Length: 390
Image 1: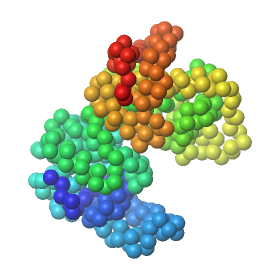
Image 2 (image 1 turned 180 degrees about the horizontal axis):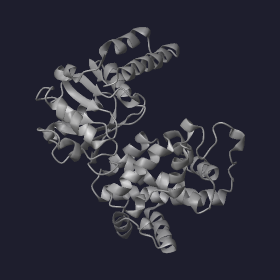
Image 3 (image 1 turned 120 degrees about the horizontal axis):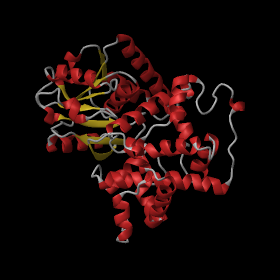
Image 4 (image 1 turned 180 degrees about the vertical axis):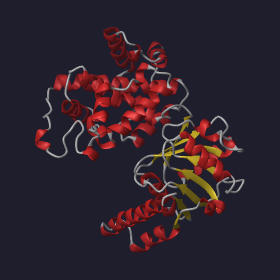
C-alpha cells in the first residue's frame, strides 16, 4: 500500500492544501503542491515561509528544520509531476464536477498503486470516485483547518474503497502524528454532521427571542466550558461558509428538519454580513462598543446550555445508531475536530441518559416538530438502563 517514504501530491494551494503539504513535508516526505494558478502558488509559498519564520522566532523550530520543510515542497503548476507519488490528496473547491474532472485526468498520470484521496468536507466520496477506472483506490481523508495544528483526520471509506487501501491510509495518516477516526460516506461525515445543532439550535433560540447572541455565547462558554460560543464561531468561520454547509447537509438528508437552515443566518448572508471577514456578523468588528453585553442570568444560561447540549448528544447517538462511526470515534472526533470540552456520548453518561431523553421528549412535546425526535438508540439505552461507557 502506501510506502513510508512515499512522495506526496497535494492538489490545491489554498489554506488547506498548503497546510496538508506542510504536515507531509514536516514528516519527511517529498511533496508536490499543485495549483492551476501561478499566483496562488506564490501566495502559498510566501504564506508558508511567513508561518514557519514565526515558528523560528518563537523557538518552536530551528532554522534548519524550517529549511528542510520548505526544501521538500515543490510548488508545481502541472500535475504531470505526480507520476512518482504514492499518495495524492486534493483540497480544491467543493464542486463535484471539478473534482471528478481532476481525478479523471490524474488517474492517467499516477502509478497503478497510488492511493487517491479527497479532503472534501461535504461531497459524496462515492460520487467523486465514479470518475475513476479504479475507484477502489479512492477514499476521503478529511483534515481540519489549520491542518498543521488540528490533530483530527476523518478517514472515509467510499462504497467502492478497498479495505486494504482504507486500513493502509488510516495507518499512514496516523504516522503523521494525527488522530484518525473512521466514518461512513454520509453527508457531513462525523464532525460536520454531529456539530449542526451547536449552530442550528443556538440560532433557533436566538430566532425565538429567548436570548441574544452574546447571552447564548456566554452560556455555552461559562456554563458549558466551550472555547467559543456558536455565534462567535459562526462569525469566525464566515456565515456564507456555515450556511452553505448547513444547506448542503439539509438537502443531502432529504430535508430532514433536524438540519433545517436558519432564516436569520440566510438574511445575514444576503446582506453581506459574513462575520469577521466582512467586519460585521452577529458582532461588530469595526466598532466593538456597539456589541451587546450578555445577560448573565444563571437560570437562563443553564436552560440554553441544556437545550443545545441535549440536541448535540441526541445527534451523536444518531451517528452511532446509523453506524456512521463507533462510540469512541464519535467522541474522539468532536473533542479533536471542533475542540468540544468532552466527548458528547461520555457527557451523556455523566448527565444521565434518562435526563437527556427527558429533555428531548419535553422539547418534542412543546414544539411538536420532528426536529426534536429522540433518537431510537437513546430510547433503547434508557429502557435497558445502559450507558455508552460501562
